[in-house]
Length: 371
Image 1: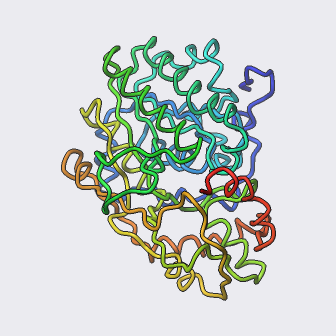
Image 2: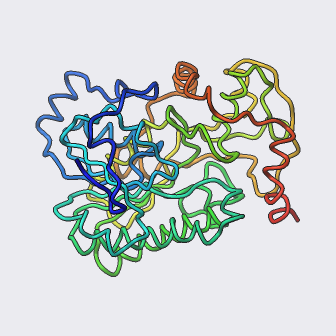
């Protein structure tokens, strides 16, 4: 039985977790052609920070499906062991409870690791405004500790999950990687500082690294509890409870909703490439209005005042990653929403957000980001 540095047992290693309703490993089951390619591909020893979280757990599924060994580091603040329960008896998956900002303990986990995927981060806007030091510790200090552990162990590939929030309120769409950086709140700032560190370690220490800026990722296992955040989680809980969707503004604002298996494919593609010192946008290739999302979910809606610091549109220019790495998104918005509705019960215990509770939760947003 594995134990964490805090001397607590890692539940995944015990093999006593039950398969949860969040299990979507079928999304990664290869076809016969792909299976043949995977068997021929070399098996890698990989490490995923934040691997028990939303995106990280889907990445673990993909790496396992591709035949790789996976070490997961997660402090379980937002990640959940249940997201990896279906790997409980898999000897190729090792789950360790670890705070990545503790650099003294980090380096030993990176021995003989080929690929590192740095997914761990604290997310959401409002908590970052309220707890800037905590976000700096996780997203900046944690990134430095991860980079140093990778450098000291001669890791072959380092892939960083960055955020499109670094663009703030863009001037043009689709938005290219060369667009001006406008970090509007501490979450955006700390994720961008992490990206700068990755590029610096690549430049100075020759660590083979790339950074992928994700746009509006959604899919099964996205967070179902905690602070007010991503629109899908808010809307699905409202749908279950028969309450109207709380639409900010008039609903004509658009988002580059990108399905989680597509961003995972981008991560694996980047790791398997020779690209280094490069930054890539990762999006769906389109942008969709909140009103369209409501129409696809079905139900009534109410409108909330528009919030400062939120763009009217997010829309990634993905031509660079398409040309350089040959990656492209595969899941349409209609298909992705259908999958979300098939997993609707995952949000049954999620908090119900109303106009009043949202107004209370976003007071600091308006206080600090308003003019």
